Amino acid sequence: MKAIVQDVYGSADVLVLRDVDTPVPGDDEVLIRVRAAGVEQGVWHLMSGMPYLTRAFFGFKAPRNPIRGREVAGRVEAVGRNVVGFRPGDEVFGTAEGSFAEFVCAKEGKIALKPVKASFEQAAVVPISATTALQGLRDSGQLQPGQDVLIIGAGGGVGSFAVQLAKALGAQVTGVCSTAKLDLVRSIGADHVIDYKHDDFADGARQFDLILDTAGNRPLSVLRRALKPRGILVIVGGEGGGRWTGGFERSLRAALLSPFVGQKLTGLMAAERQEDLRYLAQLIDAGTVTPVIEKSYPLGEAPEAIRHLHGGHARGKVVITV
Image (cartoon, rainbow, N blue to C red; front, side, top):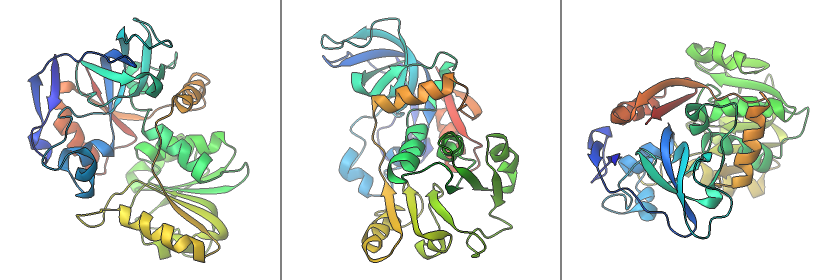
């Protein structure tokens, strides 16, 4: 089969389209014929090995799994002997290591049946970005109906899902984004939008019950000014920061500071759960949530897709078709 692989850490130039062996599913796995694969920031971190902390978990000199990609949608081709929830022919979506390929193996507990009303491309961009938004709002953020929520990075992959999910959970939503994404953020349901290039959401004029920060570069002191005295700040991901721990430094500082202030300050490491995929599929089929896809790339152009995403200009999600 063909797959996007890398032999060393580095820029998108290290990625090549290569023929590799088709994987064989283990006892608790399914083999998926990939139809589409989402592109999310984690792909860049695994490709580049940055921050260096990443390498402690995924390989010091090179990724242990050389095939990139994690979000996936496709059809089940075969199942392991312990798999009971899926059978060949099922259309599924979820997470699987090495989804930038024609075939990939996934754990049974990390996939679910694809939303009926979603295309493979739409389903492929949901598993990581939408579950991250959901867990940030519902679980870490303890969002309640009627609360005021600020979503920073509202026009990006996680942010575009967060706006829609916060509305579905009954919040009043303010989205922060660039000028080019204002119309998009309005169109997906934000009650208010703030152009960060021209307006300061932390000027003290308004405070929020919950802030979900997906942009990754503002100091905690700035974010706390926009947060109510008993509000909750959830920091998503680890963009920016130093070479060793990257943007995760903010999450660490938040955890250390939180016990000494009235506000709850926390970072988020999202979990991959089948029940969340099923819940999101229901919302998509109900028309409550619609994946926002800016651009689609063929498998051989995966390096360009990653460059585009990491440049910070993507409106919603970027997807690779196979």
